[in-house]
Image 1 (cartoon, rainbow, N blue to C red):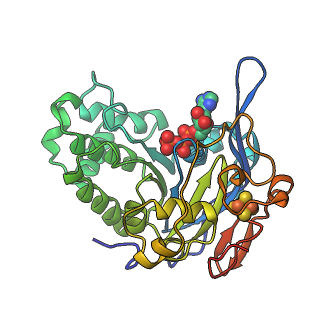
Image 2: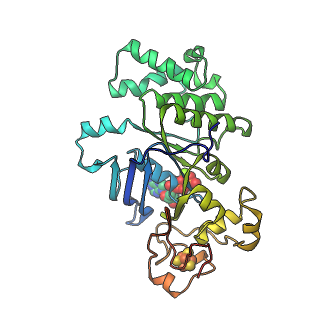
Amino acid sequence: MSTASQSSVEDDRNIVTVENLKIHFPLKGGQTVKAVDGVSFQIRAGETLGIIGESGSGKSTVGRALVGLLKPTGGTLRYGDTDISALSASEYKRLRKNYQIIFQDPHAALNPRMTILQSLVEPMEIQGEGTRESRRKTALAALERAGLATEIALRHPHELSGGQKQRINIARALTVHPQFIVCDEVVAALDVSVRGSILNLFADLQEELGLTYAFITHDISVVAHVSQRVGVMYLGNMMELGPTDAVIENPLHPYTQALLSAEPRPVPSDMREDRRIRLEGEIPSPVAPPSGCRFRTRCPFATEKCKTEVPQWREIVRNHRVACHYATPDGRIG
Ligand SMILES: Nc1ncnc2c1ncn2[C@@H]1O[C@H](COP(=O)(O)OP(=O)(O)OP(=O)(O)O)[C@@H](O)[C@H]1O
Ligand code: SF4
Ligand SMILES: [Mg+2]
């Protein structure tokens, strides 16, 4: 398969740009969950951007916003050069189909009462694309592209394995010829034995079709394998973003250092020994996040300044950004 280090990103167009993206959920009683609270990044054509972070850090919320399933509470979301808030409903619908999402649970995404073929043609029907016959042809071609025999089209989801169902979900996304796919924990629910083949399929499709991915995962070894760049989220903020090798071998933010030092692999052992930071305590509530730096309640380097000032999103090494007052290019804090 083509791995992150082998494949190259030749196209420097941005498929997606978010600036100061906020997604807040109002709760009964007047409180607000600040699930995503001021995140900025771009995703370039043909690349895979990994997004990691603990449970509840806002990864899926960002992913859903990127494909239009959640409306930004604040900030801007651009597809190419187009600010999506400026589009009419029909223009948006046309553009939006280029942006698809695949979820963790392969079964939940498929309607158990529908045949596989019915599930596959549904996105094209919703878009009003083609004729009945052309939709069928596109669906069968997508099945083959996803590595499945076309005979499977007449079966129902319960007759298939988890790996096969995830391939169907991939095929379903492919039927509308997307440019960009958010992959939200797409191998987490699968047997370890089939994860590799599904990751290979994503890599092959990227190469064949020039797809761009945002790959959301808890599993740092998955991110290391598939992504050219990785962003690290904590409590609704992006803490660090840079080339995957750089972030994994020389993490600059105390949170990333802590997250990686808890990993048995693929972090180099010398880094683990020297910079081991224990990630203690629970992630605070996104309803009342800490002032200043959101990581300060768990950061061993926190000072008074961290309480009162929000760290800037600084590019301290080329293409490598970090939100910490004291991060330095060599990874020391201070
Ligand atoms: N519809 C919603 N209403 C209220 N709160 C929500 C909603 N969706 C998400 N949240 C909250 O927003 C925060 C971020 O959730 P999100 O699902 O994006 O995290 P995540 O990083 O994907 O976590 P995980 O790794 O567990 O999937 C969490 O505190 C979550 O409880
Ligand atoms: S800004 Fe302060 S609290 Fe936040 S990560 Fe840096 S040192 Fe830690
Ligand atoms: Mg999630």
